[in-house]
Amino acid sequence: MKQRLVGYAPRTLDNGGPQASVLIALTDNPAGPEVILTRRCGHLSTHSGEIAFPGGKRDDTDPDLLFTALREAEEEVGLNPEKVEIIGSLGDVLSKHKLQVRPYVGIIPGDTELIPNLDELDRIHRVPLSFFLDDRRHHTDKIRFRGMTHYVPAYEFDGDIIWGLTAYMLVELLNVGFDARIPMKIRPEHSIG
Image (tube, rainbow, N blue to C red; front, side, top):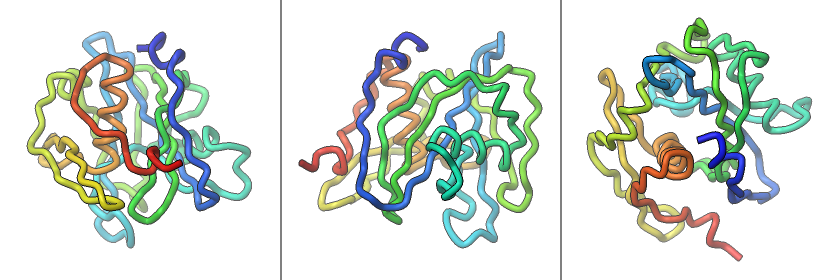
């Protein structure tokens, strides 16, 4: 995975709009890597109850989007940035709120204690990477975006559905990093120009 991601040239966006980034943290657990996911609290005004990677909007004081992803991961799950070995980034995606999101992939020690910030999250999932590599999807969502239809896998884990942009970024990781060959169309924001 490391070699594949280091040599990967992800698609980037620069639409001049607001930016965000997320951290796709994988544990180096000897029993098998896990993917760290969070569930956003139900009282939040946007994306309440949704499963997501730690991350958020870029602050004016953030020097770059990698800093944003690491800062947000520390705020949301108590992950010390010094414990993260950044491998690379995946392609930028555009949220339904027109937020440009850049995913970074990093490896963390398997025994890292993560604690949810209860103002933002009510759960942290450690999902075995093998669960996603086996493509144990719950269903496939049909999503219309910018006049195009996209079929995005959705997964159920421990009673929660992993779908939308989170699932899309996850599938890109599986395809690029692990050659999973899960069919996925290029997102419309990358076909402009």
